[in-house]
Image (tube, rainbow, N blue to C red; front, side, top):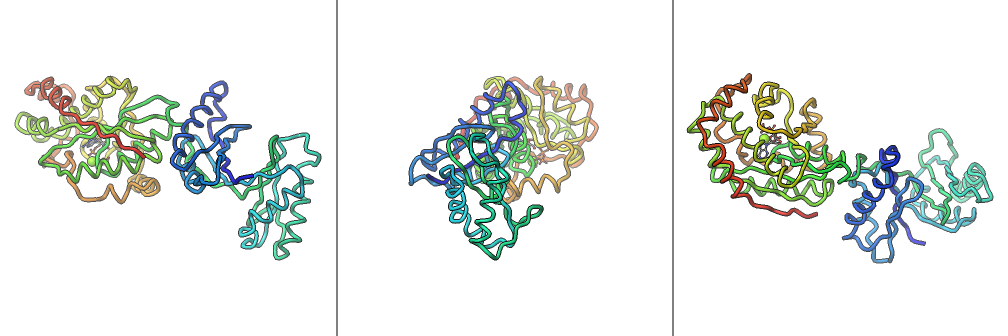
Amino acid sequence: MREMILCKLGEVVLKGLNRRSFEMRLMANIRRRTQHCGKFNVYSKQSTIYVEPTGDNCNLEGAYAACRQIFGIITVARALPCEKSKEAIFETARTYLKDALVRAHSFKVETRRADKSFPMGSIQVSQWVGGELHDAFPHLTVDVHQPELTVFVEIREDAAYVHAPAEPAAGGLPLGMSGSAVSLLSGGIDSPVASYMIAKRGVTLEMIHFFSPPYTSEQAKEKVLELAKLLTPWCGRLNVYIIPFTEIQEAIRTGCPEDHFTLIMRRFMMRLAQKLADTLRCKALVTGENLGQVASQTMEALRVSEDVVNVPVLRPLIGMDKEEIIRIARQIGTFDTSILPYEDCGTVFTPRHPKTKPHVEEVREMEAALDVEGLMQRAWDGRELVKVRF
Ligand code: ATP
Ligand code: MG
């Protein structure tokens, strides 16, 4: 029998009647994400999803790494199935976990018996296999409370499975379970983290990015596409809609008071993001905004930017400290790219004294000087779609 991967479901198991659809979605996601590692059988039993290679040319290592980044899975373990007899279980543990057993000083065996027809009880199996392993590796002591190594044995209908402790995986809910949203992706640290956090709640993302050539460079755009690429192991394949923003920014600069530049610019971003959401039938917008981080992220400013949309704006970072955000950015692998020093359109034409307590009515009046419809339409018509694949 071949080594395989056992994925434990997280919150999915709490979802009662929806549970089956959660599992189906998760299994479809696993199949898609392990495709490049060869052909695997993916099936579920007793809140575990089995990912089983169908041939010797499957890349189990790669599939294991992929499973650790699939939302909806709480832990993953590599396991070796064997015949359901105590001798086979011992022999499998002895050879399969040999390195770990040699390295450890103390151990225990923990058995779960899902197949109630198996002639021994779980404690008996643990004791017997533990005793044999102790004889085979005499340097080990048995420690049932805090062992360095726990050898897991699961006796199920089709086979017994032996594995070392599982490793934590991504958690969250399976992608696609919670609908889709448009995420405003800049080149900064925050928006990739915000995207990751919303995807983790089961939301499929469509990305939108605004760029302002020649004020922002081609490298700045490449950087955003690179960030999208780094997000794909978590978020799946991503479509990035790139919207030319130069004309809008120039119009704001000539037509509106300087202290309101950023606020009005953000309103255009929100409008265009909503237009994309409506077109793609997405139900929300996602931003990396964070209360008090910059002038445009006061409560008054958030009100002004929200004023122009009628879908929920999800801001998962709203109450986090920068340190926490950076920790996640490092963990998901976007940090090093985010800090590359290219201009973003948000840093072009920054006011010297940005308004921190704007009034919605005043901002609406200022905008009346602009041809909002025409500017929106031309930006929209100039959009470019880049498909970023894993
Ligand atoms: P980030 O680190 O994500 O760039 P920030 O702290 O620099 O965020 P702002 O520049 O004020 O904050 O942007 C707030 C949010 O607006 C961003 O998190 C992002 O969601 C969105 N945003 C800003 N600039 C762009 C852009 N050029 N294209 C798309 N979305 C943007
Ligand atoms: Mg930014």
